[in-house]
Amino acid sequence: MRPESQGVSFSLPPFTGAVRTLALVLGAVFLLQFVLYLLPSSSSDGSLYQLLMRWGRLDPQAWLQGIPEVWQLLTYGFLHGVRDPMHIVGNVLMLWFFGSMLQAEVGPKRFALAWFAFQVAGGLVFLVPVAFGLESPAAIGASGAAYGVMAACATLHPDTRVLLIVFPLRLQTMALGIVALTVFAALLDFKEGASGVAHLVHLGGLAAGYVWVRSGLWRTDPWAALARKRAVASLERGADDEARLDRLLEKIHREGIGSLTRAEKAFL
Image (cartoon, rainbow, N blue to C red; front, side):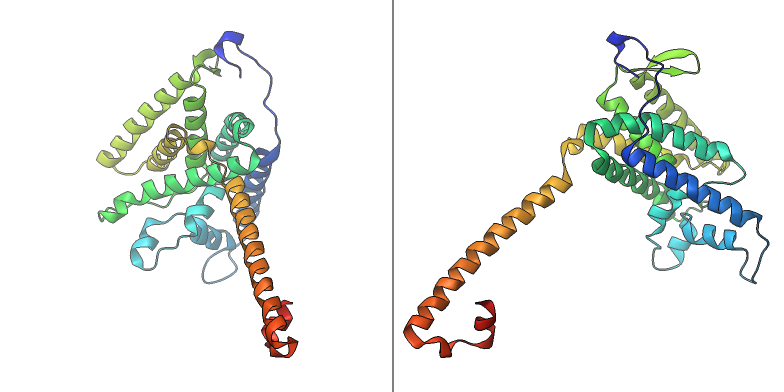
């Protein structure tokens, strides 16, 4: 994909960095799910597949019954329905095509952090109806993160041309169309009941990707900020140690080395 002024490119995006790692992990987890799905039930609690899904999916009812199972906000994004392989295929393709574009802007570490932030945001929006006592089926899949990455790319590069089947579209136009369809489908779910697609997860991811760019957070590098904080702390510790050393040397000069405590001697 290239800006409009350069036409449409049919070259595949690079498959490197966090994009490749996330895609391989998603694929490995799906393969594990499929293998466990084929195994027979081995306990009264159900098969290993059922246990994995029960533990890892984002289950609103579980959040209503007691202490929130917060790990589900991360684990649900690694699980996909084994009877619908197009679910994971679609998410991995979005990760590859749009994730490579975003990774080129912010680097692998910040991209991975954004991916999980979008996923958590999608999960939190999905849980909103629970706060009002509404029932909802459990959610699985990386769609919230994938939609968030697409929204971030569309906000950063609205004029980039993409091919939708055989029709070239501006990335912003495609994203707005997906938002409209997602809102439409979510409203139908509220009216007619859940359709089996977690549209609120999609909307949460889309909103998070847009806000992440528009707020300027995409320019923030938490790893660099942490390194600066550590460097400042190191300098402050060095200054404190130097001042303490001066005080101890002055004490030795006045009272002799025997006046030092065990801790002061260990410091020296």
